[in-house]
Amino acid sequence: MDTIYALASARGKAGVAVLRLSGPRSHEAVQAFGVPLPPLRHAALRRLTWNGEVLDEALVLLFGAGASFTGETSAELHLHGSPAAVSSVLRVLSGLPGLRAAEAGEFTRRALENGRLDLAQVEGLADLIDAETEAQRRQAMRVFSGAIGERAEQWRADLIRAAALLEATIDFADEDVPVDVTPEVLTLIDGLLADLRREVDGSRIAERIRDGFEVAIVGAPNAGKSTLLNALARREAAITSEIAGTTRDVIEVRMDLDGLPVTFLDTAGLRETSDLVESLGIERAVARAQAADLRVFLLDDSGPLPGVAVQADDLVVQGKADLRPGQGLRLSGRTGEGVPELVAAIGERLRWRSAGAGSLTRERHRLAIERAIGAMESVRAELLNGQQHTELAADDLRRAIRSLDSLVGRVDVESLLGEIFASFCIGK
Ligand SMILES: Nc1nc2c(c(=O)[nH]1)N(C=O)[C@@H](CNc1ccc(C(=O)N[C@@H](CCC(=O)O)C(=O)O)cc1)CN2
Ligand SMILES: Nc1nc2c(ncn2[C@@H]2O[C@H](COP(=O)(O)OP(=O)(O)OP(=O)(O)O)[C@@H](O)[C@H]2O)c(=O)[nH]1
Ligand SMILES: [K+]
Image (cartoon, rainbow, N blue to C red; front, side, top):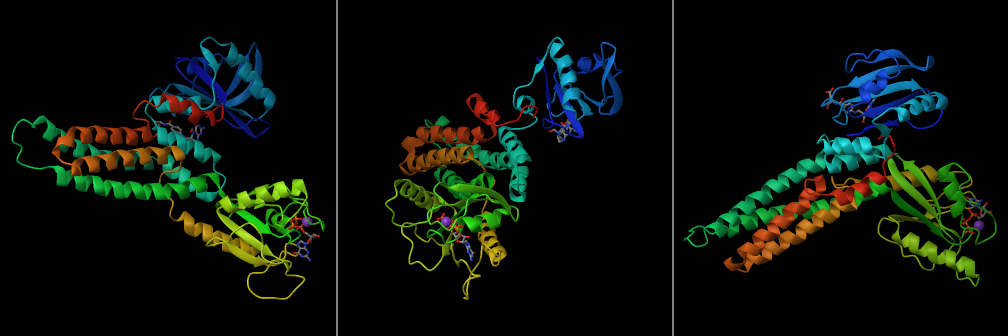
């Protein structure tokens, strides 16, 4: 097994930089800097020296095999966060025998291979590192803590019990088995199907929390959409002008809206037009607005808007409130009046939806559950079709178990690893 090393903290100037090593030679690599090794798990200050020159004064921290993040013998060097100091130490490490630079996610991959994390926990860890808002952090932390594995373990136990009942029937098929296990198996399956369908519903919202909710600002040309976007973003994210048809492409601004990840979309003003580029922009605006999680219709004096239907929960607001009196939801992107109320209304709607989030956070999880549901529906049909289908049903039950097992990586998932680890940083 190679010993791997990488900068674990972000690149660039910083107060402190953490360099991480994992693998059998990580302690001797530290020793190569001419320092006595501190006892395991006790940080000690050491002068890292190479060819008689002090490279940096660092904190050294050693972990023993079986008691580290990766499960391997490992070490950390807490250097000054100087790009030059980091480079000088990395240069020495790269020349030591048995050492090589780590690939993206390789420390976590070793933790997975050593059974310290399951596959879903690895995904949770990736999401934790990517989390930008409180809702994302909370959700990622739940997955990282093993919530999916716990659920899967319960479902698995039910399926194993159902499979054992069916297999007992098959084994004793030649004898006269007095009990019909079908009702008990059906009860198990039906309870589980209800559970899994709930999970699928909850996963759609969890996926939204992971990726961010999209909120489209829709309205006629010159209604003030870009001005509103800039007020929300508190910066000049979009060009505004008195010329109708200014915005053509969809402009996206990611925000932390009260802990929820939201991407606001500023779209082309909706109108009939003979300008080719503008009409392409309007096509895009309509498609993105319709697919968004929520729409804010910004009204001005013009009539009904072509193209985008108002869906339940959407917000309809009167713009340019500084110019005209009125009631109801009104705002001015120019003065900022009414903008906090809009933000609150959006937050309320998205928070309400977020409450339905389940423990499954990725499409991969949802597809695994959907496969398990499909297999279990076959089991149901086969059992209701009579005893001669018991073997088929037992096969389908095993298929359902395998699908659930793929959630945590209990079955062979080598093919998934590349994709999952591709999103990791080097040093994680
Ligand atoms: N400096 C530093 N900070 C860090 C990490 C790290 O690797 N280094 N982490 C990296 O992600 C996270 C902490 N995760 C860790 C997970 C397990 C062990 C560990 O040594 N586990 C042993 C002993 C557990 C114990 O002391 O109770 C074990 O599980 O056997 C260390 C860090 C966040 N902060
Ligand atoms: N008085 C007032 N003027 C505004 C307000 N919002 C925007 N405007 C003005 O209205 C004009 C159009 O604003 P934009 O933000 O470019 O409008 P838009 O809806 O993005 O326009 P298109 O991209 O052309 O569809 C500009 O001259 C803005 O300064 C507002 O709240 N009050
Ligand atoms: K405009």
